Length: 129
Length: 243
Image 1 (cartoon, rainbow over the protein chains, first blue to last red):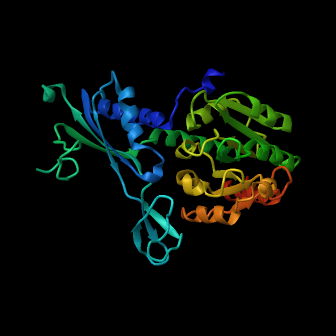
Image 2: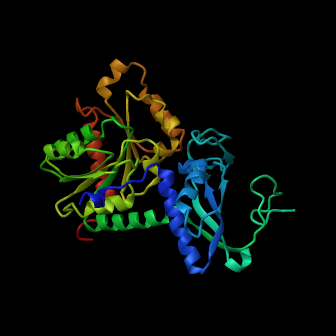
Image 3: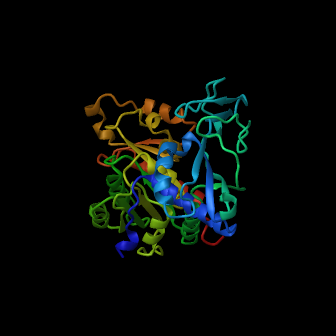
């Protein structure tokens, strides 16, 4: 019982990399690819995930898999809000989600909370040699 | 020459000429967790159990709030608790002593709970008599906000001893709050410089319209508002029994 409720994952970026790796390996298997050369991620500052830690953690998990050596390309996206009152869209700091025009907090987030596996690039053994 | 991937001018470390087959995925990095969380939520809906994820820094008073809540609801609603902690069964023991079912998840070195851990814990809980299930997340203002557990509501606690600018420092966590509870209100005079109005303004600066309750589990201030909020959420989140 104890073991089922016991986890050994340290920082959450490591758990997130594990989740990405699992999905990428599934895509590779579906496409019968031998190697993954590049993984593109979209991460917004409001997602709570540090791109630098992802870049650091991913290779540790990918070692020995078809993802080993893959380039991790992370597109960090701007934080943008759209005002519900004056309809202005503005780029704002992540702890001041206020309309840059009229100052209200009655806004919707239009960008900044993304946490996406955008695309993967697959290689055949033949394409490599 | 342009980069084949994103159309930029290339250069530095990102210049990349596509050499292989591109597969568009465009799916959440936490797709598997989200899937498990949706499954947990179905479980809670079917059992008609309002599930509340409690998050805060360590020592903000989550367990004390739960003890007071179990006492306040005694004879009206049945509460159960899933406790997340790095080590020890201390909190689960406190909950059991207060008279509720509790399951302890010891996360070892993990800084947060995820949907799979909660699912595993559900196998050790009898949900049939339960009306409200609290998930006491690992004390941490960073990671727990990233992982959907299948809860109906996220509640974030901020104790007056921590400072009223915490929402500004931890925007990801406080943006997730659907209710913010300012705890340890009985200590406010001793602390001296905690301003509940400022704490609320920092929350609004995150475009978060969540209600705020000022509370002391020790003195009982705010407990009525908290219990009322829970009752409202039960009515909002759960289908009527015969519908």
